[in-house]
Image 1: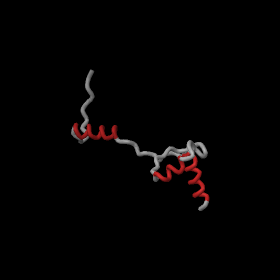
Image 2: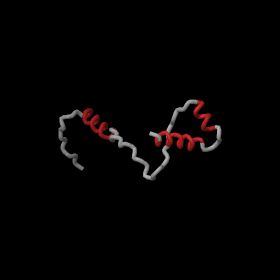
Image 3: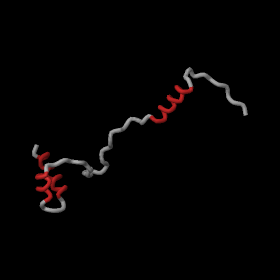
Image 4: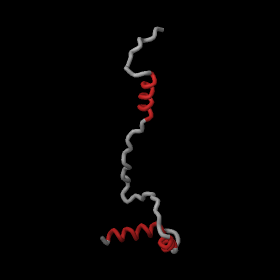
Length: 79
């Protein structure tokens, strides 16, 4: 089988390989995260709290995360 004729692109073989590699490995632009599709959906976050604040909400046992959420909602509603 005959080989197609060589066409010069103006690039050396190395430059052509670098262009092809960059095109194949470039990450697409990241899209911002979508808002939850469910109303009032919870989102997992990492939050740093003072030990005293954490102990206050945990002293009544399970449900301390919901109590923190409710306290924050009350602060928002009072503004």
